[in-house]
Length: 241
Image (cartoon, rainbow, N blue to C red; front, side, top):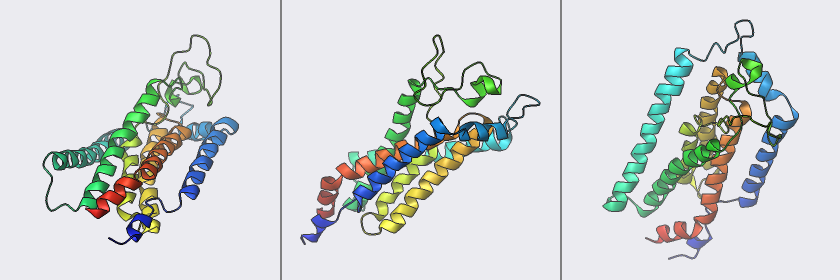
């Protein structure tokens, strides 16, 4: 087997990728802590005259985007996970080993991303916009790392959970790595974009702030980059099968 097989780096430019991730984290912190962009977006979607978010219970935002689209994406994700599990129990002979590796990679991201986000949310004190006193709720608006007021109930609203139903699609970039990194980057961006759109609709409803969605995007990006970084030996082995 040619030695070049072992020289194919699954993550072509790791320093650039990790550097971009660090810059993304800094951007989220700056937006949240030193600007009012979060509030400006929610102010735009909040009807101060009637003290409500008009998009909250609309068919498009609630039933279609938060309901139907989420279910479709979840069914797609569960289908891939089940396929991987069945193939693990009784390997499908027509499945190429490298395809099996890529499907397992996607399935793991589809499982871990919402799980990690949910665990963080369960320990989060930050509230959703519609629970903040600025928008008719009773909770204080807190920025990242602000001191927690004594007696304040946890909001469990950070980071954005709904966006994860689409963000895992960014893992499909694995199908174009390492041979076609530009296409892989595009697929990665499309997956993040789908999650961002889902998150934005939730912002329209008053369910999340912008940085909640951006933080969810950062989490899945960190997860995928971490998995790419540690998967090189596995990738090499599957290429030899």
